[in-house]
Amino acid sequence: MFSDQTKAALNAKLSPSTVKTREQGGRKVSYVEGWHVIAEANRIFGFDKWTRETVAINCVSEREREIGQAKNPGWGVTYIVKCRIIVDGVDREGCGAGHGIDRDLGQAHESAIKEAETDAMKRAFMTFGNPFGLALYDKTQCNVGDDAPNPVSIISKNEFMVECREA
Image (cartoon, rainbow, N blue to C red; front, side, top):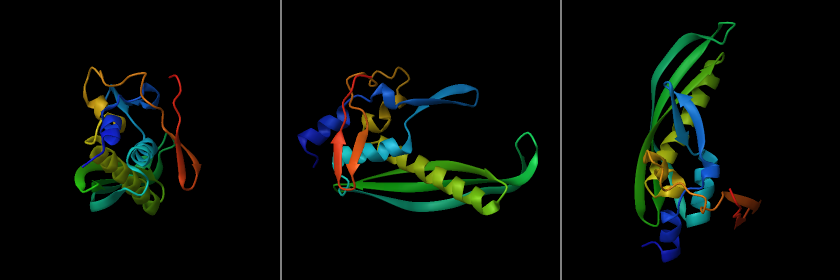
């Protein structure tokens, strides 16, 4: 199904320079950004060799709320999305959540949907291997290492180049 070169890329360690952290629920959480996942998919599979499909979008919360220290009136919205990734006949699905807060209800919905779609896409891609963030699900992160390639740099609309630098 996948070439030996593709399998090797999927088994490669995740570059620590691509790992970000944030506070969530009082603890530190590691993640990779959505643009990085797309860049890795383009690098490993080819930009025209994979597809993403949003399977389901559900608004699970919409309520008025105060925003910021000034307690301005606004909206809080939450969506759950299911996404499917198809690569060379292999389908993988992931679910994600997104939260939007804005003074404008439409903007809150837009932000929440985008975040949920990106989260679902990352969770679906994660099942393909370490370069997509699978390595972060292991608490020891033993598959995060210095020998992994850095993200793809876009040269032009149709050309890609892998940049390998010291982390």
